[in-house]
Image (cartoon, rainbow, N blue to C red; front, top):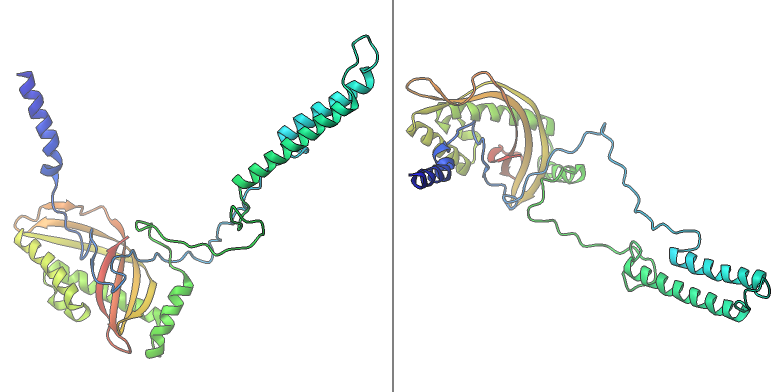
Length: 310
Protein backbone atom coordinates (compact mmCIF):
# COMPACT_ATOMS: atom_id res chain seq x y z
CA UNK A 1 0.00 0.00 0.00
CA UNK A 2 2.77 2.42 0.95
CA UNK A 3 4.66 1.51 -2.21
CA UNK A 4 1.62 2.22 -4.40
CA UNK A 5 1.03 5.55 -2.66
CA UNK A 6 4.65 6.52 -3.21
CA UNK A 7 4.39 5.67 -6.92
CA UNK A 8 1.23 7.77 -7.25
CA UNK A 9 2.92 10.73 -5.54
CA UNK A 10 5.91 10.48 -7.86
CA UNK A 11 3.62 10.34 -10.90
CA UNK A 12 1.69 13.43 -9.77
CA UNK A 13 4.91 15.33 -9.16
CA UNK A 14 6.21 14.40 -12.60
CA UNK A 15 3.00 15.48 -14.35
CA UNK A 16 2.42 18.61 -12.28
CA UNK A 17 4.32 20.95 -14.64
CA UNK A 18 2.32 19.62 -17.58
CA UNK A 19 -1.03 19.82 -15.78
CA UNK A 20 -0.41 23.35 -14.54
CA UNK A 21 0.70 24.79 -17.88
CA UNK A 22 -1.93 27.13 -19.32
CA UNK A 23 -1.54 29.13 -22.48
CA UNK A 24 -1.23 32.76 -21.41
CA UNK A 25 -2.22 35.51 -23.81
CA UNK A 26 -0.88 39.02 -23.35
CA UNK A 27 -1.07 42.00 -25.76
CA UNK A 28 -0.04 41.76 -29.39
CA UNK A 29 3.27 39.95 -29.53
CA UNK A 30 3.49 39.73 -25.73
CA UNK A 31 5.58 36.91 -24.30
CA UNK A 32 7.18 35.89 -27.59
CA UNK A 33 9.29 37.19 -30.45
CA UNK A 34 8.01 37.02 -34.00
CA UNK A 35 8.41 38.54 -37.43
CA UNK A 36 11.44 39.40 -39.55
CA UNK A 37 14.37 41.78 -39.05
CA UNK A 38 16.12 40.82 -42.25
CA UNK A 39 19.57 39.41 -41.64
CA UNK A 40 19.28 40.45 -37.97
CA UNK A 41 16.27 38.25 -37.27
CA UNK A 42 18.30 35.84 -35.15
CA UNK A 43 20.24 38.47 -33.21
CA UNK A 44 19.04 40.33 -30.15
CA UNK A 45 18.13 43.97 -30.77
CA UNK A 46 20.42 46.58 -29.26
CA UNK A 47 19.34 48.27 -26.04
CA UNK A 48 19.05 52.05 -25.84
CA UNK A 49 22.41 53.69 -25.17
CA UNK A 50 22.95 55.10 -21.65
CA UNK A 51 22.03 58.73 -21.15
CA UNK A 52 24.88 61.28 -21.19
CA UNK A 53 24.18 62.09 -17.52
CA UNK A 54 25.36 58.64 -16.55
CA UNK A 55 29.18 58.71 -16.64
CA UNK A 56 30.86 55.62 -17.90
CA UNK A 57 32.67 53.55 -15.33
CA UNK A 58 36.40 54.30 -15.40
CA UNK A 59 38.55 51.53 -16.76
CA UNK A 60 40.75 50.17 -14.02
CA UNK A 61 44.43 49.95 -15.01
CA UNK A 62 45.90 46.51 -15.35
CA UNK A 63 47.39 45.37 -12.04
CA UNK A 64 51.17 45.45 -12.02
CA UNK A 65 53.12 42.67 -10.32
CA UNK A 66 54.38 43.75 -6.93
CA UNK A 67 58.09 43.59 -6.32
CA UNK A 68 59.94 43.68 -3.02
CA UNK A 69 62.97 45.90 -2.44
CA UNK A 70 65.38 43.08 -3.29
CA UNK A 71 63.53 42.06 -6.48
CA UNK A 72 61.91 38.92 -5.07
CA UNK A 73 61.53 36.94 -1.87
CA UNK A 74 64.07 34.34 -2.93
CA UNK A 75 66.66 36.95 -3.87
CA UNK A 76 66.19 38.72 -0.57
CA UNK A 77 66.66 35.52 1.40
CA UNK A 78 69.73 34.42 -0.50
CA UNK A 79 71.32 37.86 -0.45
CA UNK A 80 70.62 38.12 3.28
CA UNK A 81 72.25 34.76 3.84
CA UNK A 82 75.34 35.84 1.87
CA UNK A 83 75.52 39.16 3.71
CA UNK A 84 75.18 37.42 7.05
CA UNK A 85 77.97 35.04 6.14
CA UNK A 86 80.20 37.92 5.15
CA UNK A 87 79.60 39.77 8.41
CA UNK A 88 80.13 36.61 10.41
CA UNK A 89 83.42 35.99 8.69
CA UNK A 90 84.59 39.54 9.34
CA UNK A 91 83.55 39.62 12.99
CA UNK A 92 84.05 36.11 14.22
CA UNK A 93 86.17 34.39 11.60
CA UNK A 94 89.39 34.44 13.61
CA UNK A 95 88.43 34.62 17.25
CA UNK A 96 85.99 33.76 20.00
CA UNK A 97 87.27 30.19 19.86
CA UNK A 98 84.63 29.27 17.34
CA UNK A 99 86.91 28.04 14.55
CA UNK A 100 88.03 29.63 11.36
CA UNK A 101 84.55 30.41 9.89
CA UNK A 102 84.07 30.81 6.14
CA UNK A 103 86.45 32.77 3.98
CA UNK A 104 85.95 35.55 1.47
CA UNK A 105 86.03 33.07 -1.46
CA UNK A 106 83.11 31.13 0.01
CA UNK A 107 81.20 34.39 0.35
CA UNK A 108 81.74 35.15 -3.34
CA UNK A 109 80.58 31.66 -4.32
CA UNK A 110 77.42 32.00 -2.24
CA UNK A 111 76.68 35.44 -3.66
CA UNK A 112 77.26 34.19 -7.22
CA UNK A 113 74.95 31.23 -6.66
CA UNK A 114 72.29 33.50 -5.20
CA UNK A 115 72.50 35.82 -8.19
CA UNK A 116 72.25 32.87 -10.63
CA UNK A 117 69.15 31.50 -8.88
CA UNK A 118 67.56 34.94 -8.82
CA UNK A 119 68.12 35.45 -12.56
CA UNK A 120 66.67 32.01 -13.34
CA UNK A 121 63.62 32.74 -11.19
CA UNK A 122 63.07 36.13 -12.87
CA UNK A 123 63.31 34.66 -16.39
CA UNK A 124 60.83 31.91 -15.58
CA UNK A 125 58.41 34.43 -14.04
CA UNK A 126 58.67 36.71 -17.08
CA UNK A 127 57.85 33.81 -19.44
CA UNK A 128 54.78 32.82 -17.45
CA UNK A 129 53.34 36.38 -17.30
CA UNK A 130 54.03 38.23 -20.59
CA UNK A 131 53.48 41.99 -20.63
CA UNK A 132 50.26 43.51 -21.97
CA UNK A 133 50.35 43.88 -25.73
CA UNK A 134 53.36 41.50 -26.01
CA UNK A 135 53.31 37.90 -27.10
CA UNK A 136 54.67 35.27 -24.75
CA UNK A 137 57.67 34.57 -26.98
CA UNK A 138 58.40 38.17 -28.02
CA UNK A 139 60.60 40.75 -26.44
CA UNK A 140 59.50 44.08 -27.99
CA UNK A 141 56.42 45.98 -26.79
CA UNK A 142 53.95 46.37 -29.63
CA UNK A 143 50.23 46.94 -29.34
CA UNK A 144 48.70 44.16 -31.41
CA UNK A 145 45.05 44.11 -32.56
CA UNK A 146 43.16 41.35 -30.82
CA UNK A 147 40.46 39.35 -32.55
CA UNK A 148 37.10 39.38 -30.78
CA UNK A 149 34.38 36.84 -31.42
CA UNK A 150 31.14 37.42 -29.51
CA UNK A 151 29.58 34.39 -27.91
CA UNK A 152 26.44 33.15 -29.71
CA UNK A 153 24.46 33.51 -26.48
CA UNK A 154 25.86 36.88 -25.47
CA UNK A 155 23.54 39.23 -23.60
CA UNK A 156 21.72 41.93 -25.45
CA UNK A 157 24.25 44.63 -26.38
CA UNK A 158 23.79 48.34 -25.83
CA UNK A 159 23.26 50.48 -28.87
CA UNK A 160 26.16 52.71 -29.82
CA UNK A 161 25.31 56.20 -31.00
CA UNK A 162 27.80 55.83 -33.84
CA UNK A 163 26.08 52.78 -35.35
CA UNK A 164 22.63 54.32 -34.95
CA UNK A 165 23.67 57.67 -36.42
CA UNK A 166 25.33 55.94 -39.34
CA UNK A 167 22.18 53.96 -40.10
CA UNK A 168 19.99 57.05 -39.83
CA UNK A 169 22.29 58.93 -42.21
CA UNK A 170 21.84 56.18 -44.80
CA UNK A 171 18.07 56.49 -44.48
CA UNK A 172 18.25 60.29 -44.86
CA UNK A 173 20.26 59.96 -48.07
CA UNK A 174 17.14 58.65 -49.82
CA UNK A 175 14.61 60.50 -47.63
CA UNK A 176 15.83 63.99 -46.83
CA UNK A 177 12.77 64.77 -44.71
CA UNK A 178 13.17 61.81 -42.35
CA UNK A 179 13.01 62.86 -38.68
CA UNK A 180 13.68 60.29 -35.90
CA UNK A 181 11.51 62.21 -33.39
CA UNK A 182 8.55 62.25 -35.76
CA UNK A 183 9.12 58.58 -36.51
CA UNK A 184 8.92 57.78 -32.77
CA UNK A 185 5.49 59.46 -32.70
CA UNK A 186 4.40 57.40 -35.70
CA UNK A 187 5.66 54.22 -34.03
CA UNK A 188 3.61 55.06 -30.92
CA UNK A 189 0.50 55.50 -33.09
CA UNK A 190 1.14 52.11 -34.68
CA UNK A 191 1.52 50.57 -31.23
CA UNK A 192 -1.96 51.73 -30.15
CA UNK A 193 -3.52 50.77 -33.49
CA UNK A 194 -2.11 47.25 -33.33
CA UNK A 195 -3.22 46.75 -29.71
CA UNK A 196 -6.75 47.93 -30.55
CA UNK A 197 -6.98 45.43 -33.41
CA UNK A 198 -5.59 42.73 -31.13
CA UNK A 199 -8.36 43.28 -28.56
CA UNK A 200 -10.92 42.97 -31.37
CA UNK A 201 -9.22 39.70 -32.43
CA UNK A 202 -9.21 41.02 -35.98
CA UNK A 203 -6.00 42.48 -37.40
CA UNK A 204 -7.58 43.73 -40.62
CA UNK A 205 -8.02 47.23 -39.18
CA UNK A 206 -4.23 47.42 -38.69
CA UNK A 207 -3.20 45.73 -41.93
CA UNK A 208 -1.96 49.02 -43.44
CA UNK A 209 0.79 49.29 -40.80
CA UNK A 210 1.81 45.62 -40.81
CA UNK A 211 3.86 43.60 -43.25
CA UNK A 212 1.87 40.69 -44.73
CA UNK A 213 3.90 38.17 -42.70
CA UNK A 214 3.40 40.07 -39.44
CA UNK A 215 -0.32 40.49 -40.09
CA UNK A 216 -0.61 36.74 -40.69
CA UNK A 217 1.28 35.88 -37.48
CA UNK A 218 -0.86 38.14 -35.29
CA UNK A 219 -4.11 37.06 -36.93
CA UNK A 220 -3.34 33.40 -36.23
CA UNK A 221 -2.87 34.29 -32.56
CA UNK A 222 -6.21 36.12 -32.62
CA UNK A 223 -7.88 33.09 -34.19
CA UNK A 224 -6.57 30.89 -31.37
CA UNK A 225 -8.02 33.28 -28.81
CA UNK A 226 -11.36 33.24 -30.58
CA UNK A 227 -11.34 29.43 -30.78
CA UNK A 228 -10.77 29.26 -27.01
CA UNK A 229 -13.55 31.74 -26.33
CA UNK A 230 -11.20 34.25 -24.72
CA UNK A 231 -10.55 37.98 -25.05
CA UNK A 232 -7.36 39.78 -24.07
CA UNK A 233 -8.17 43.12 -22.42
CA UNK A 234 -5.64 45.98 -22.41
CA UNK A 235 -6.42 49.06 -20.34
CA UNK A 236 -4.66 52.17 -19.00
CA UNK A 237 -1.85 51.88 -21.54
CA UNK A 238 0.96 54.32 -20.69
CA UNK A 239 3.89 54.48 -23.11
CA UNK A 240 6.82 55.86 -21.11
CA UNK A 241 9.35 56.09 -23.92
CA UNK A 242 9.88 55.22 -27.58
CA UNK A 243 13.60 55.15 -28.36
CA UNK A 244 15.23 54.28 -31.72
CA UNK A 245 18.02 51.76 -31.12
CA UNK A 246 18.99 50.40 -34.54
CA UNK A 247 18.84 51.63 -38.13
CA UNK A 248 20.23 49.94 -41.22
CA UNK A 249 19.61 49.13 -44.89
CA UNK A 250 19.74 45.84 -46.72
CA UNK A 251 18.23 44.39 -49.87
CA UNK A 252 16.71 47.71 -50.92
CA UNK A 253 14.86 48.04 -47.59
CA UNK A 254 15.15 50.47 -44.68
CA UNK A 255 14.97 48.93 -41.20
CA UNK A 256 14.48 50.82 -37.94
CA UNK A 257 14.05 49.31 -34.46
CA UNK A 258 12.57 51.20 -31.52
CA UNK A 259 12.39 50.24 -27.84
CA UNK A 260 9.01 50.61 -26.13
CA UNK A 261 8.93 51.06 -22.36
CA UNK A 262 5.31 50.95 -21.23
CA UNK A 263 2.88 49.81 -18.56
CA UNK A 264 -0.73 48.69 -18.74
CA UNK A 265 -3.43 46.49 -17.28
CA UNK A 266 -3.20 43.23 -19.20
CA UNK A 267 -5.65 40.41 -18.49
CA UNK A 268 -7.62 37.74 -20.33
CA UNK A 269 -11.28 36.90 -19.72
CA UNK A 270 -13.69 34.16 -20.71
CA UNK A 271 -15.89 35.56 -23.46
CA UNK A 272 -19.03 33.93 -22.09
CA UNK A 273 -18.71 34.81 -18.39
CA UNK A 274 -16.24 37.69 -18.29
CA UNK A 275 -14.25 35.84 -15.63
CA UNK A 276 -10.54 36.66 -15.51
CA UNK A 277 -8.47 33.61 -16.43
CA UNK A 278 -5.08 35.27 -16.74
CA UNK A 279 -3.53 38.55 -15.58
CA UNK A 280 -5.09 41.13 -13.28
CA UNK A 281 -7.70 43.88 -13.60
CA UNK A 282 -5.94 46.00 -10.97
CA UNK A 283 -2.20 45.24 -11.05
CA UNK A 284 -0.42 47.00 -13.94
CA UNK A 285 2.51 45.33 -15.63
CA UNK A 286 5.59 46.98 -17.05
CA UNK A 287 7.25 45.69 -20.17
CA UNK A 288 10.05 46.40 -22.62
CA UNK A 289 9.62 45.42 -26.26
CA UNK A 290 11.51 46.08 -29.48
CA UNK A 291 9.45 46.79 -32.59
CA UNK A 292 11.15 46.77 -35.98
CA UNK A 293 9.71 48.67 -38.92
CA UNK A 294 10.66 48.36 -42.57
CA UNK A 295 9.92 49.98 -45.92
CA UNK A 296 11.38 50.16 -49.43
CA UNK A 297 14.30 52.60 -49.46
CA UNK A 298 13.06 56.16 -49.88
CA UNK A 299 10.12 58.23 -48.59
CA UNK A 300 7.71 55.31 -48.34
CA UNK A 301 5.31 54.12 -45.65
CA UNK A 302 6.74 52.17 -42.72
CA UNK A 303 5.27 48.82 -41.68
CA UNK A 304 5.79 46.74 -38.56
CA UNK A 305 7.81 43.64 -39.43
CA UNK A 306 8.89 42.19 -36.06
CA UNK A 307 8.24 42.28 -32.31
CA UNK A 308 10.93 41.07 -29.93
CA UNK A 309 10.92 40.75 -26.16
CA UNK A 310 13.69 42.26 -24.05
